Length: 102
Image 1: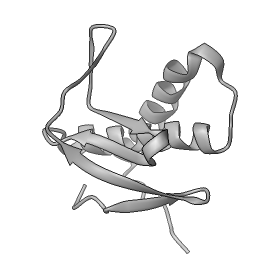
Image 2: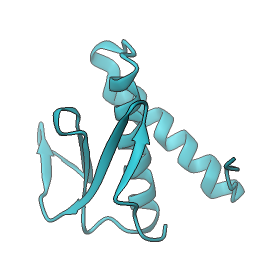
Image 3: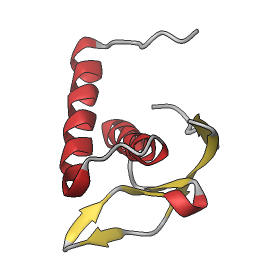
């Protein structure tokens, strides 16, 4: 993945994307990134590179979509988002798909 954009549009919101030095640890698990709905921001650890960076950005974008469109996934949000992200990342990686734009 080349340079990250400063922001992306998700729904009606501009969502900032920032690389940070912070380590995200929740329930004794280490995470590469997080979506902060209240601040309309995605933070990604600066150490994330290559496929880890692409997967993390997509993962946090899907969290933002779930939030913006009020998709009720209950307590399984992380499992659902992780499954979708890993599936889409694998399709892209294995097939070298370039999703067309406009």
